[in-house]
Amino acid sequence: MRPIPEIHAEIDELSERRTNLWHALSDGHDPTVRDELKALEARIADLWQEHRATKAALRFGERDRIVARARAEERLERAA
Image (cartoon, rainbow, N blue to C red; front, side):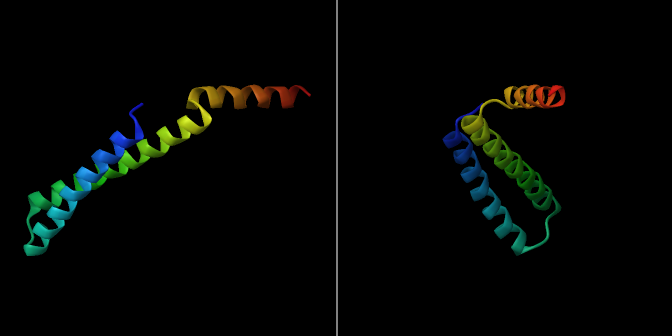
């Protein structure tokens, strides 16, 4: 799990690159710029997902432990 500031730094860097690509694309249609922009958008979306997962893990604990605890509580409720 990477620290949130590191994830933000990468998002900022890629966002700046995305802005430059949008400016290049506004000058004229270029399939390579379009493809790079699409890949960049996907990477930024992945980074935001990583950010949300990291933030949730810091606040609530690791996902596996949360799921295990929920399943244990569910078994207890069924048994009662």
